[in-house]
Length: 220
Image (cartoon, rainbow, N blue to C red; front, side):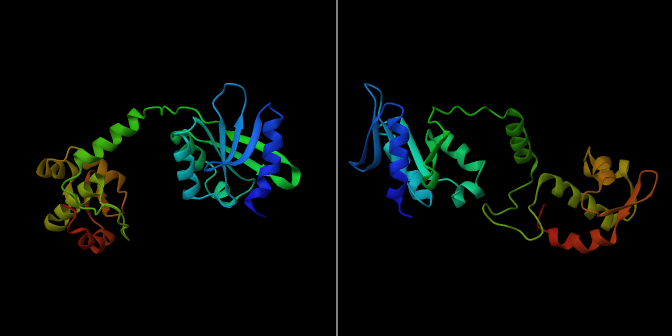
């Protein structure tokens, strides 16, 4: 199969909607014109990739009605079924799938101006984590084996250090000494398995906490 195999069914599909269609016009794979409307431009690719997306973005300088045409069932569509349309919507590109053997063309996404809905809660969580985190313990773009250092982990590490130095302690005392208002919650939830509850409000560092504490020595 070659890219030109996608052209015939696409041409018939567009002509059925009243367009005059021509292939390889300028640098465009397919151009369709209907009356005084802005031209429809379609860039074809058997294996959709970044190059195809970049071509589509370039064609937006010629028309706001630019589609990417790819085979039905292509690998990228299968692996990025939700994310690819979101990306194309943000870029203002449309998406067409073509099944040449069945002469079937499907418009998956029309190119429309994209105005993303603001995620105020998400932004609040992002800025909250940024402000609460102490220092800059993570290298941007790196993957850590044990996990990233978050503000929550930094708080847990501080409590673990306190218990390692002072031994079993009441949650209220830990909260006071560390000036950590959420000490009780952190000890009770014990997300990382670092704390053992000895009695009412009294905790000590678990064996797992002792083993893992050294790995987070630089997470202050």
